[in-house]
Image 1 (cartoon, rainbow, N blue to C red):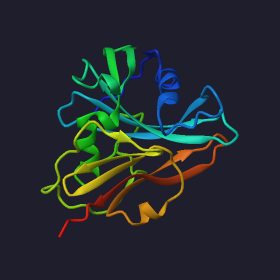
Image 2 (cartoon, rainbow, N blue to C red; image 1 turned 90 degrees about the vertical axis):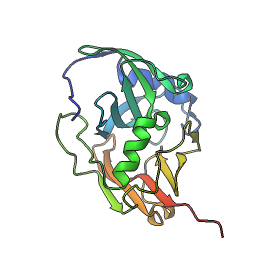
Image 3 (cartoon, rainbow, N blue to C red; image 1 turned 45 degrees about the horizontal axis):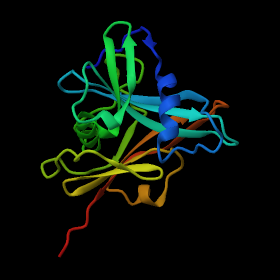
Image 4 (spheres, one colour; image 1 turned 30 degrees about the vertical axis):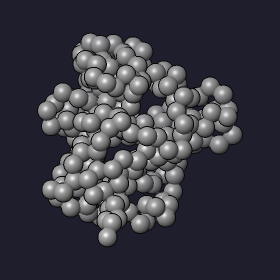
Length: 218
């Protein structure tokens, strides 16, 4: 299980994201510089214990209407080879030292564990507490036992509000902009749902990731 340290990061995660988010194709930058707040999230454990994985939900209050984004991050103690384009930034961790922080959808460790979550082989963990499952993150449906699905190929191409990859016989989609359930979510073979808070304190729930079986060609 990952250990969550009560310490500081310099620069902090929100400061890094404020500089990184505006360059993403799914970010609504019409209101200028982002004004970000953490509004929820969860973690997954690396079976090897080497890579930290956090699915951060951040709400940007800069526009006329707040918008909540899902930003999966991986934390590494050394650079990930060939992933310079996916680097969000580096930060000095008060306990672990320098950390390289990556856009998680482009990190093969996070991709494999997200797929495992959708297949019932991994369990979501609390965002801010060690060795504590997060039962508010729910997997709906079933995508098989993983025997016929390899970890997603990388890098990932971002869409307007989602990132999609092929994972063997499946298409895995991570929703970047969070909101109510859509038709795509209802049609998914499996999905991950979770909750987040709005700036006024209201609780919201919706899909976070979807798995669709890729149609086979005759």
